[in-house]
Length: 96
Image (cartoon, one colour):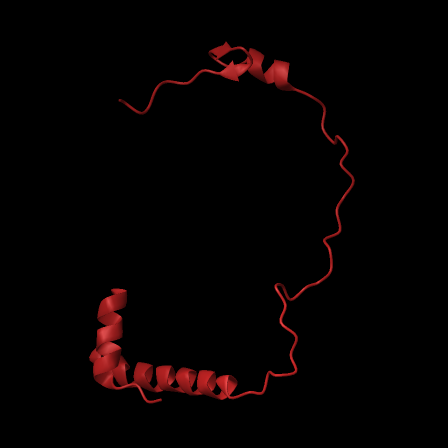
């Protein structure tokens, strides 16, 4: 499928891109090549290909769930300007 220069201009306008007049022919050629490649892939015989939800059927290796840092909550809350019930108090930034 061949893309015309006018179609490139329209696509650029819809995408909010600035394309110089000198580059339009190059973009038209590149977009045409991409669409031709997609057309070739569309013609590939995939009747023997088994559908899958994800290309990797392996399960993820999980690390052991162990504590790796010591609890510093009380020390960090102690240096905060204002806290209440174990939470940091911050100035209101959204007005109703």
